[in-house]
Image (cartoon, rainbow, N blue to C red; front, side, top):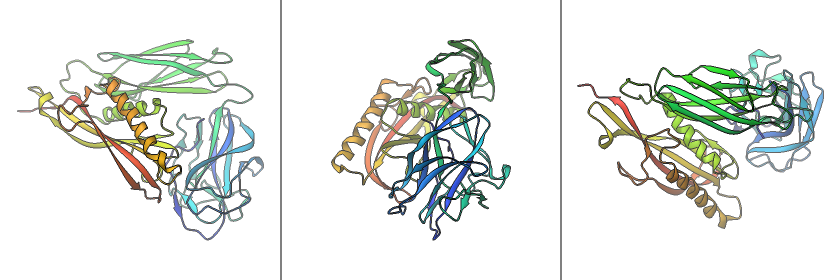
Length: 415
């Protein structure tokens, strides 16, 4: 199930006081809140009788969840006693009680922060009264003071789309094909109730979008002006406001431009393709598109980032130069979580699954010319194990895959 916060993780800050810390959200579609999601530091242990709550903006309690005495470090989720239904357009507050130190992401609420599926918005501190990044000096009391530094204090929520038994539509298939500058995207959708009145909004990754209403198979097409790798996303919204979304990369080659610049969109498309392989492997709780400085998640997690870049003479032509882009794909798991004998088998098996996926897809779904598995143009793909201490103190067992990919005709050679 999705969660509301899609901004930076908090970091632990020392504080002698106890608080009720909260975040004010707006539901953009009908939602059912099922769990509190809270971020706490390593000191939040041996603290009893704490709760997480859902409130109206006027301070009426809508839901409550009991927190364990020892919360550990990072994100944890806790079921509300009963689901809380929130209608589209409604603002509400989620909060929890701390027992000493707090987690804060300073300045994270300067602007609105949307959830990954845009169903929920953490509101900018300046757009609501009394602000956001809410707190009260007494745990268990409605947080009615906004922080001056517009912080996010690690109070979040897990939800399901829809209320009153309405289920969200489900995208069962999505394809994007390209022919030169033209892309055609198609989805197949099912819904337990009805697709009558559903809309399908395609975003093409270049700032444009199209909306269609045919079902259960919906298609749209778009002509690009520039070559590159674009992330094509589709959001399907049913008549009751419940939604589902999917994304696919597409490689566009506009004729007669000579080169395919390594633009931000191209790089983002390559990273998205690698993240997609990791997410669909079934091994990972979370996959980050950057190198994390704090715990990326619990269980087995992964992160992807760019590690190196350079020309490839053997793949370059008379007028253009190709590049070898080296990605780092790092697998993480808690180095202190028992049973310790299973840490290395778990991380190694996840690593082997990813390397097998790359071996089976030499172009990452068309995002690159090829994955340089055997090192035809440099060092081959390989993985190295190690230990890592993150900024928040987490001790992680890691395995880092060095993944070289080839992108053709990136730079023009000018005589």
